[in-house]
Image (tube, rainbow, N blue to C red):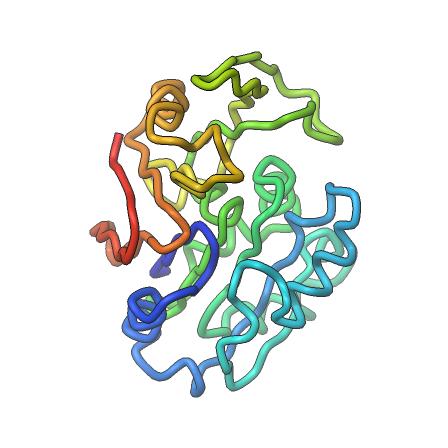
Length: 237
């Protein structure tokens, strides 16, 4: 697959143009499946999923003018026959993977069988990640939490970042689509753990090269070649 890894979705002309280039045709002529799974661990997750599917969420994915848009909920896939969902994934021009909890998302990508399926999809298909959807593509990632992640017993490391920003660091296993890691929301005023100084401290805990990208930036990956598309700020650690 080709990949477009974002912090906050397709929010500017540069990222939109990169998506159309990856698709090889206009977005309006392309089919997509949106994956809201990562949103459910949070209070109000059901409402956040509805807004994401309706194109009303903060990360622009569903409201880009797709020719067709379906919903792929990973947590139901183990209970239904593969014949009911695998052809739809193979036929889709794009998989739109919402943000949320990357531990939860990566776990369900494996449990559902999607992680195993992704490397077999046609080369023209595009994986579009937002925040956690981008984080989970790494083989190993480190995410920050303000409280222990729900439904997980992974080891936690308490860290106090610059500015007295206290977080729990969790190392997770992603699905290995890329050989680098992503820190989203770089320099965002509501994500103080992703300030330039704190992102550097965060990235030092990650055992692979790490891109910190802001909400106006994205990472494009084609045949292993990485390119940053940005109207904002980003850094490679």
